[in-house]
Length: 142
Figure 1 (cartoon, rainbow, N blue to C red):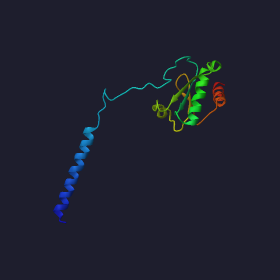
Figure 2 (cartoon, rainbow, N blue to C red):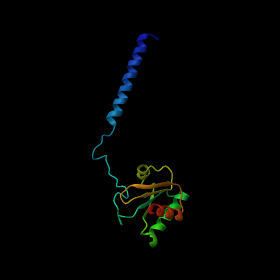
Figure 3 (cartoon, helix red, strand yellow):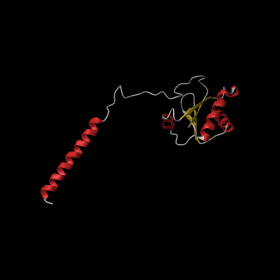
Figure 4 (cartoon, one colour):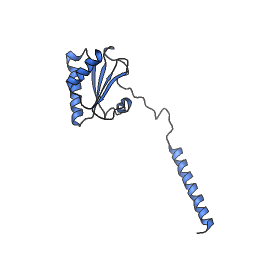
């Protein structure tokens, strides 16, 4: 091939790449009122009793140990003898996916204990029994 043909191919290639880059940059959505959303994370403010920690169980529906952890959380939330220990909440990861990123969760189920001021006191990834959860809460109190 001659030198002129190589130069012409190089110029055409640069023009095509420049046009593609321009199309990508122009087509990118710009931030503005129509593309931004605000999501309230749970436990941003104390809801029931300001001096109680919050116990957040992040689970995934359909996964065995996640379902078991969710059931334990709901059992503790409904039991009157635990109402003065903490506020319990089970959250399905598929419905609230931003929580995993917010708390740095990489495995489910995950248990996060948050103080009434919003500070993470403990994060545990993996299954915990009801007794282990109560023991953890009592160790944080004492």
